[in-house]
Length: 403
Image (cartoon, rainbow, N blue to C red; front, side, top):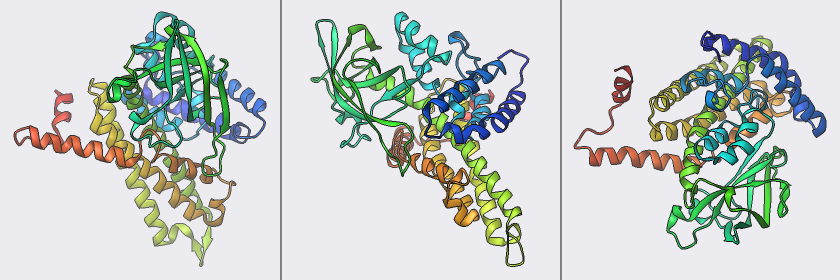
């Protein structure tokens, strides 16, 4: 992005593109004709590149436009209004681009990172396994054994999002069976067309097939140099990938909530009952007030977390907080919009039904609410225990940034 382009201008351009080009294409993009869907998607991606709206948040050194994290919140909340906009604007790959930029070897950068940022290939990431409590990932069983210069991988993963269109999967494997806890795992890059990579099914989620695949690894053999980072660094890499990913989710949830809010308010004016528009009913006005306050509070928490990251702080408390609060917020707002629509809100005649099901996922993926609540509370209580009475100062970070 050139120095002269203000983020407010970019935000308006993204919103216009979304409303004029992506919204009308959503029925095709989520349709059963996968070839037509992909052709439409590729066409929209090309349009976004021509419009200068591609890879806004990727660092400049890897081919992106280098938008600061704080400014990117305002853009990504617009992108979040449609589940397909991430792909169209080249932000779907940002978590993986950041991860590869930090840990990939020169050969891996050439093979995966450059085409990833350019939108020539899509990534996938495999960590969760069926029949295990993935909130405790030290239980993961997928293994990789080094034999004669090759990793031999065996196991089963699910919720490998986009495996059917991805060029490769980054797989969390147990490579150090004798090592304790988190240090037993590594990350390995595996092409999805490799022998032994077997997609079993698109796992239905609340009645939708949305690209979360179950995959079996049957004696996959890849070169030793497909290891990402060092042996035993799997959890370190995963955390550095998932941290920014959680705030990206929170940004997009704001977009989903704002779209539902728009639909709700328009419905209140366009629908009448008991002698007047729904907008005149006090209980309906309560829905507007509660949704507005929750969205705006969540926006401020998200902006605060983005300031943390821009300042170089990992923001573990702030990101854990927004992951939980944001997931609850988007569910609540969409739920109220459905209530305002009545029976129509339960159908697929509006986007709300699909949005609602995705919103329920938000409280589970990238760590369930319970894990983040516990983690944040432990960090806060540790400050009170170990900081000689200083505790948690709500304004301390703001003072550091302003200074």
